[in-house]
Image 1 (tube, rainbow, N blue to C red):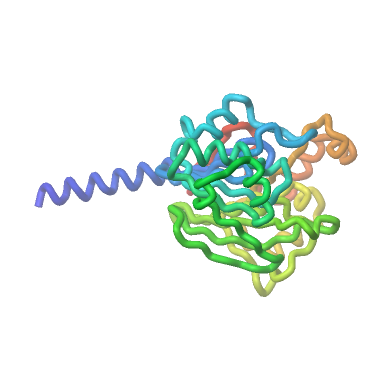
Image 2: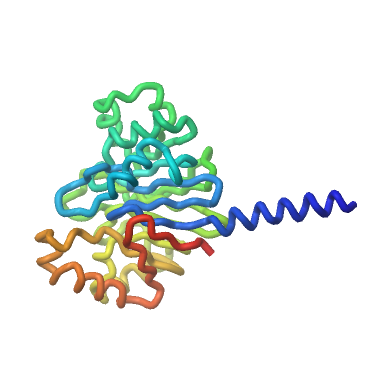
Length: 270
């Protein structure tokens, strides 16, 4: 009986340890690292030098991500929402897949041509190429964390770009990354809201009151993590009054905002 109690206490301590290690960490721009303490997911993070005007991870963090070292040694899943180079590049993703035999990837179907051009071989068997139209929802099996994909519009002028949102479950909490979701979203609304505990969403939905109202009409969300701030030096940020002004308006837009915008800055999932 005494041994059984010891075993139960040990299992509880391990479970609590994993729960305490469950966290969301910011990489750069729209890149995030989500861990349940045992395995982890990289979301829109493997894009190396990205695109002009957008933040990128430091050389050390990029090297560790691509080579599956340090905190990135237990990545189970690599996710990219769409093919723009500030969200994914084929060679960094391929490097991680070659360094980490346990990693799988979910990429938009449009990424297949880029992965072939990068020289992918047997690693292709570990990639799920998703092709969802706006409004489509698809649950996937075979991953350490439950995964649901959402077809989300990239907005007017980008209708030819497939943009996928991902929702995963970590220790009973849901975390969703919507990529470059922009404009009205077919299939979702007051009668069909998406429920999520932590939502990573582009800042442009938050710095104007009418856009906040729209987000509240399609999501039941506990915590919002704004993302996709460009560099202050970019023309885009300057056209909106500069990065400081944009962040001030974004972070004050609603009372459930979480500030998570520095490299490897983390919050516990609770």
